[in-house]
Length: 122
Image (tube, rainbow, N blue to C red; front, top):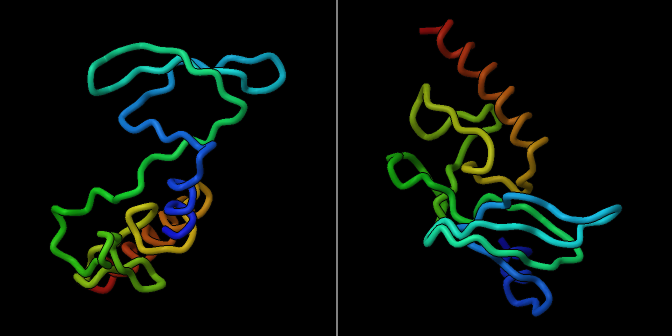
């Protein structure tokens, strides 16, 4: 979260919430984006020198009655089990220092393996 908070305060970083990239423009480098505002369906173009796609800052975990941190991230054991026996969490909804596709994939593998072992034992 510290990196995200720092990025939010940086003048040359623009956050476009509720937006969908329809097309990326550029020859050898990214030069611009064709975007859709998901709130009002407006289409617009934006010139950029770089692009970092980020799914979200807050996890969508309100519906789960399990142990979470103050930001809503699900607390798990190293085997991805939550505070509820037999319930496992993986990926960006989980409390972890790194949120990337590769680490989410690893979480998923560990959670699947752990869930399989849990089922075998009941």
